[in-house]
Length: 238
Image 1 (cartoon, rainbow, N blue to C red):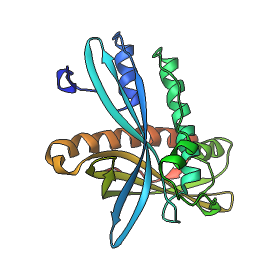
Image 2 (image 1 turned 180 degrees about the horizontal axis):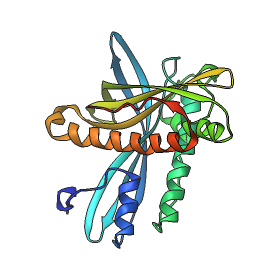
Image 3 (image 1 turned 45 degrees about the vertical axis):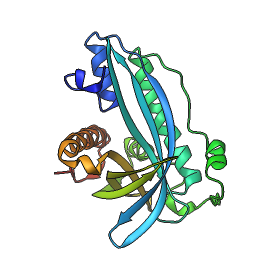
Image 4 (image 1 turned 90 degrees about the vertical axis):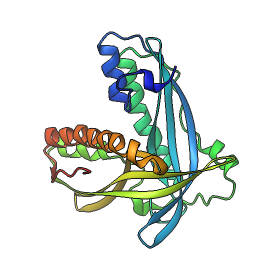
């Protein structure tokens, strides 16, 4: 049975939790992928590593599958270094595990493993770059704001074409990315989040779903900004 058998198949962790709250029986499994991806950003072309987790299982008797991008790492200064990206990915992953287990969804808790990545992609320069914000995440700055400090965040959204490289094939993929430029405590930091993606060849069918998923994730994040009194201007994909 395929995703098409589910009226509105889950695209997010929040969707899975919604199904279990509605009384559905759910199983959940994870598969981790660290995929080399060629990005084309304006006139700049560069390779990065995308940290993906594929969630799959059954809702009742109906199969589902979606994947979530947890971080993007580069062996240069265009995005956080791969050594930082794996730690950022695992911090976001830990938050999702807690949400799922709190909702009563049982699954084996695994993490992205940098050592395994190094074996698979030999030759990556692992020297740490301190200019990309260390292993802090957006939620660290939300907590700073909750403590009464001024936090200003500028949000830029981009749709970036890319090519994913798997063992025996290449997939053209389009990523919906968010750039968060943060000013607080006299310092500036920049973070990037992959909010959704879709197969470039299936843009007509998949772009609207990816756009809705990305905007839903932004709404959740903006609600957290509001609660913490973060200074920002909402921005959504159209």
